[in-house]
Image (tube, rainbow, N blue to C red; front, top):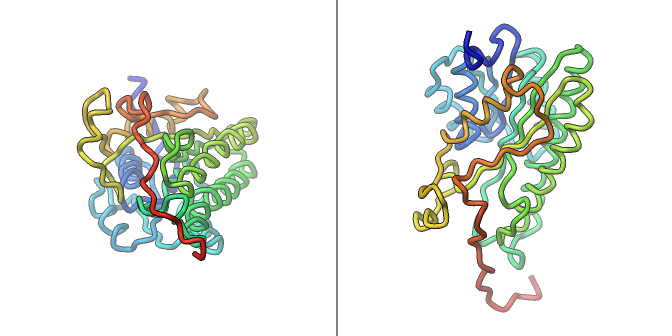
Length: 266
């Protein structure tokens, strides 16, 4: 049997993917279902969840959940729904993130936007991962968690709420990998480049900065994501970051934003 055949155990494995309604989260969730893994598609948009499940090769394995993970109450509701629908979740992918706008630079981003970005990325990611890990530890079962971070965890993006949230998430991956490893739970990060998916619409001219010569698509990340999630293929990998960017991280293409005089009364 090929090493790459049946990377998941369809009888045992169960997955939860946040941000599964669009973009990279949707692509990974569809990939998991395509490999026979029952998967809970969690997203803030009911319409997007329905569309994602409708695009699945195995809609019978795709389960919907709708809620705003900026609220820890919603996180608790998601955990309860996952427990009821799937039992122990063995594979967790945290891709949910609020939309980002170029206007939200350091002198413009408001408190609510700042807090929501950190709440969905960092607070929800920690809360969900810790609870899922506790359940696996109690059941003496192994697991694999994958967090979507960003190139801008280490490179300024003119969006400080986004960059700092992703930087914190990158360290959370290391913290959780170190703590959970002895219990057979692996935690890794997937680091996308300029991916034309979800709410991100990149200027096509950005391709000139990418050694492979094109913007990425969500589908470009799925093979790496599934390989890292698979305990069969990556069972000795934890605390690692996997960059899928066509070589974009070899350059820093962002200039400081052009700013008008700030309104000190704002």
